[in-house]
Amino acid sequence: MSGPHHHPPGTVGGASCVPVFECEDCVTPACLQYEKWANLQIEEGVKKQKALALENLISTDSFPHAGIIQKGETSMEEDLVGQCRGCFNLADVMYFFKKGCEAVAEDEVTHRFSSEKLVSWNLLSRTNANFHRVSWQLSLVWVIGILIRYCLLVPFRIKCWLSNQVQMMCATLSVRCVSGPVYFHNRENRPQKGGICVANHTSPLDVLILATDGCYSLVGQVHGGLLGLIQKSCMQTSQHVLFERSEMKDRHLVRKKIREHIADKAKLPILIFPEGTCINNTSVMMFKKGSFEVGGTIHPVAIKYDPRFGDAFWDSTKYSMMTYIFNLLTSWAVVCNVWYLPPMVKEEEEDAVHFANRVKAVIAARGGMSVLPWDGGLKRKKVKESFKEEQQKKYCQIVTENGAVGNRNVC
Image (tube, rainbow, N blue to C red; front, side):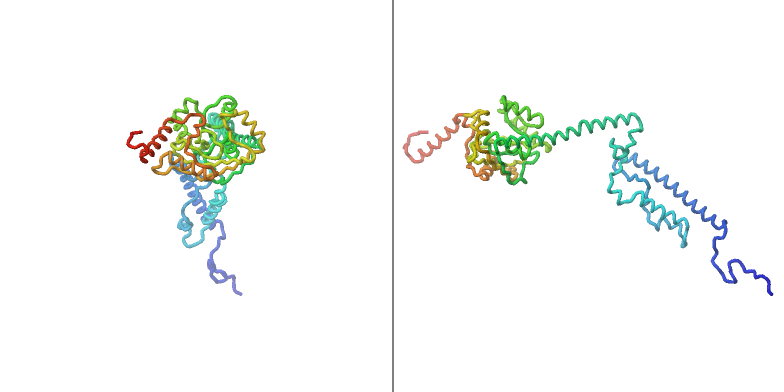
């Protein structure tokens, strides 16, 4: 009987086999290599974080990404090129572990749906609510910011919106008092901020009717009595352009103030009645050229009342304001149609007079009214001597051409 067989190392029963980790001496080198690689990665990450923080301090053009984990820009092949060497390496697990943590902690897609993390604190709580506890000076600035935002900015913004809504509601109630159904057409052409709205003028109701569908800044003369009280109350919430009687004669000052108003695109559109007085709604008379000299966009509006239910025309030379209001309240109703016409601008080499006549013709055609070249102010003033002289010259020319006076120099 033969004795025990002794096989050489690396064989089992005479057959060769792959060496396995059978002792701590074999596992220790792999752990040391993993620990060395991890330490190198940590040191390299700390250096990158310090460099990134320094770049954030000195850079003013852009704000680099400051996330929880600093992601590498290299590919997997570049990161593992010195680790693999054609065989499996236990340290390679850390690369995939690192990529998994990056994807969980700071995904490139999901964090796009949350607020951006700012590098510096903007005194709001959405970035970092703990910044205001760093020092009492910073806490004081944070408290002042709260007072400004909540006590000044919020009420002011609400006031602007609320005042417009209140004005429209008050105007609607005033029109409803006279049983006034108003029909608005082509609302897509409503006047925009920074523009000038021009309309034919029939009654003080024109302002209220237009105010039921939008807010405007008014241009007019400062009045006393009941109208003056209404003007003062309106000036508390809106920016109107009002002039004293002496200033109204200064056309340059009027144009300057209107031009300054429309230059601010945040202000309400200016409502102007270029006729300067109330007409009986059967025609459109001469438009004053002043509102067409300031430039900007003109938004024409045609207003037409239905006389079958009540007369909306205010003859200020015959009736006072109180009498006029009483006549409206005792009428059947005030039925009105309003057409918003497409905006118009002055063409090249077109003067203010021709531009005004072009706008007037569009308004008259839409409202079914006739066009007259006469100044509406004639109901309060005598005819100018220049008009009389012009008619006399025309008649003299006709008589001279026809030879009715022979050779006598009549002119």
